[in-house]
Length: 175
Image 1 (cartoon, one colour):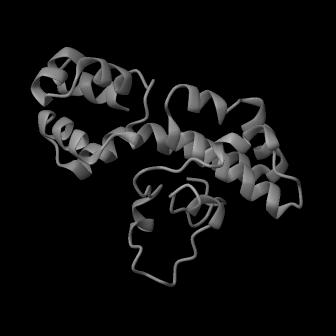
Image 2: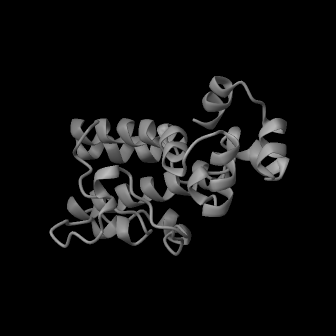
């Protein structure tokens, strides 16, 4: 999480904004998770990483911890039972609430998971989310570092995730 990183680096939002050259309001939204770090442009991410004395890879590893926790929680529900995972997504409003807070990576990941589980189990897709099914992440998103090698044609990415530019291989691998 970016906020935890700032605490460890002993820097506040204003200082990060000044040092990176990234606008205060945007940095504030990223730190407070009102905007998704996954939707942050590569140039902005580089500026933030440099200001925090990190490589771009280190920066993404640090800040994506929040997403990894989200993914892990979801995968544990899936391991319990597909229906439990579907209800977890719906009852916790993981899609709409994350869209509203600008956490598009989490929202689309939850939507892809919901669509995959519904399709797999022969359920109709939840039509409440049709308006979000036209969205896609601007940049390819790899939930795990292992998935990052797209040149490997042996990998089988899940189509429901690819639709949103997310390269996910296995949602049953609770981590």
